[in-house]
Length: 79
Image 1 (tube, rainbow, N blue to C red):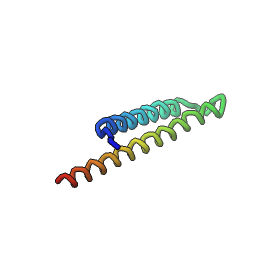
Image 2: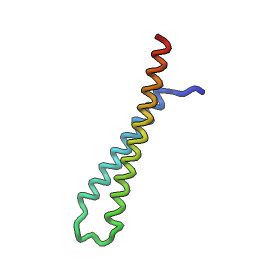
Image 3: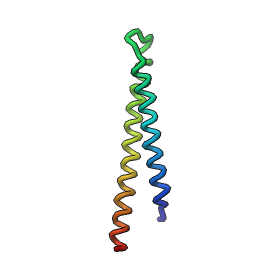
Image 4: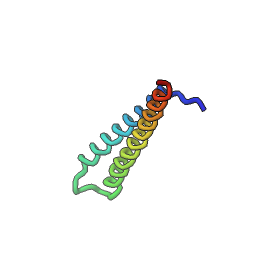
């Protein structure tokens, strides 16, 4: 199976950026909340989005790690 390493790395880095952007948006919404929030949903939605952003970054980071290990093994085998 042929994999395109630069493309995989680019997609993973893009995934990290998407996760960071989600986290930034969610944390901004959380910071704007006041105790006078009209519904629990107003609070829960950005907290869930922040959790999702954390998972997005973790998954993308794992892909980067796997790509790094694979590339390292490839270089070791060629050397």
